[in-house]
Length: 346
Image 1 (tube, helix red, strand yellow):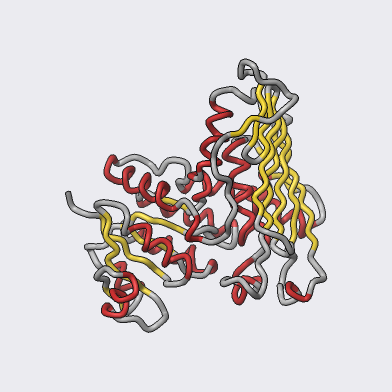
Image 2: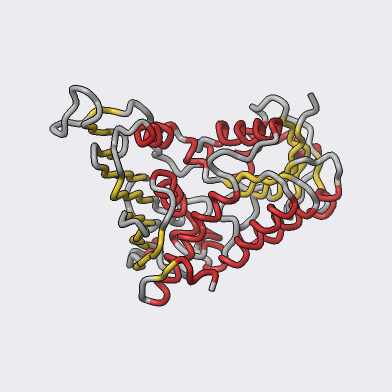
């Protein structure tokens, strides 16, 4: 079986986690890296323990017919142009979130991927966490009944002690608390409560702490989602909190509730609403990319390539819907009014 050969663009923190993950998947090879930093094939092999080519440019990598998949791990503003070029070159894609820093560019990436008929995996990898899988299973098995309210919140202090702080503080790169990090929370809410978000109202604030003064944008946001069928949701994106990392999940249905790793269900014989049961899974509790569930996500992506099937859970279309709501939320905060999702395409 011919291995899939991956070309990695960018060589920062997240790229290292991707490379270490690829090494664990049979039939996948990391062919090389394109980066602005000075690396040689020898130095790359010393760092990662496998032979790799150091490409002189991204264009050289795209022109290499042996490359099957492009893995985009560059700063956020570069994602759109690089993804479009890769799709046009006929390469399958793995794209770190966000896909782009504007709704127009996200739409352009989607259109390029569809036109080229390439497979794409967007790194909303928390859908592959055991916690998210268990919660989705509880929904699918009707333990919660019909969901009418959900909140998923992201609390993670991205201050001077954190690796991405230096570039994350810039508006051009981070964009917003929601887009730079809280989009993971938005994505999970939409995974649990898909379809039909009609309108978003969002508010922003920022800490007066000295640790976050360098940010060029608001570092806290709360977004309220109004669904066309009457459901409601809430997502907080807080990157200026002085506390341990916390990924809060709370879903309310007609027959039960999920709260983080606990649940109640009237559809589970013997269980009532007077005490919690346990989902029995580890919670999402770290912003360290080495702890993220890339392995099951990437494994599913390459299985999909072999079977000529779309990427499950985190394909380009699912990611576009998450971005659509995020951009509507940021526009709402900017304009100071609710924003209908239909306005984005007007």
